[in-house]
Image (tube, rainbow, N blue to C red):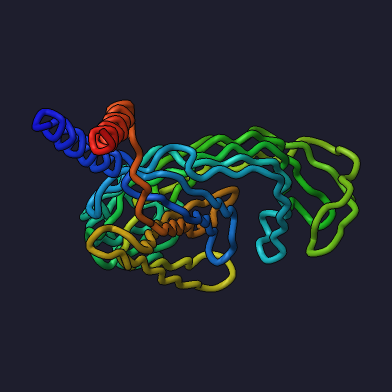
Length: 318
């Protein structure tokens, strides 16, 4: 009888340890949305979720927690250098580890200048724009969305002539990356067509006859910074007036790490012209407790408890 009781106590202890270990292996169930913005214009929306291991101070986000694909058609009636973009796309996140204090320190950055500045017009090469991370640190870190775009970019060349540049783009969204400046070459001289059929918002519905080769687009120049729960301020001073943006993250989780958290990131890109455009990333997550899971040891311990319970029942009957 004593031996049976000892075995039962050991099985209970093992079962409890297994439940604890199982909870640690999958601590949170995450659901959330990633929104990519070019200024106030939404570029991509990725909805996803899954199991996220970690702690209140560190979250290990698995790759492909957010995935999307589709087709995209955009017109730019207020930007004279770009008429429209027609493309198919896929987008997904890379694996990331977000930690307390992982957001960038407070800084100021002018687009096109590798050091901090206080005035967006101090930037060189025509790439004018200012980014300020106003509160240093915060929960965050590098968070990369990989994009694969394949399609046709159409640029306005003259009143009745358009340049069509077919291209394939496979690069990360600039906002959310580790602090860096990246450059990529143009897509080569595009074809120039004349008298296309124009549709709503200046869109090109039917291209005209090819009349020659256009001018290659300028080299793209991009600068981006990691995500944070802090405050980010941006100024876009080139183009149609001056636009200012202020975005703020938040951490509403409890001491167990359950609840909502929002991280923001920013960057600048000159895209297909010498104008610069702010790029933002908005990562919103809701973290809930995970259901403890059992491995082989847990199943064995549970089986032992059932057998022992049956043994006690038989001893009582006889």
